[in-house]
Length: 147
Image 1 (cartoon, one colour):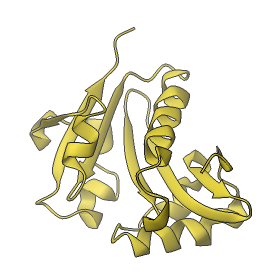
Image 2 (cartoon, helix red, strand yellow):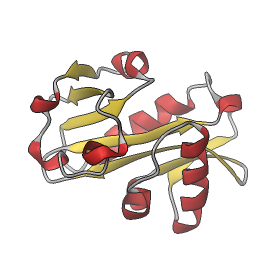
Image 3 (cartoon, helix red, strand yellow):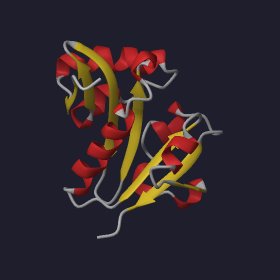
Image 4 (cartoon, helix red, strand yellow):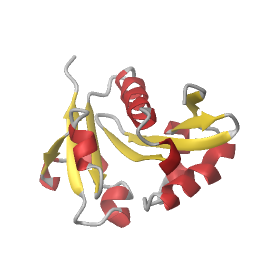
């Protein structure tokens, strides 16, 4: 797994990103609009993981973090999330949100805390994730980084 590299996504990676999301039962809505904020994990020429964000002026929505099954439990997802947060923080963002139906414990270990949807920064409410791409039963979580 040491050969897996994490790099910014290119337009040619969009189909692979969507395939990984479909394979992991995650929505693909909005990927075409936000692929430039995605990072991908690549093993040689094969895209094996991805993670994206929708960055707004004051907050960001972390979305579409997925790793192919045979590559899980090797820290690839953790590296994707860390690099996403670092890239967004370097732009001055300090509030990060996400919706999840299956990875609450995973993100809890990374500092995210469950919150009520009425606590979400208003800028994010217009995103496709909050407009129906994720079910109402998805857990909403937030991470606030201190300066």
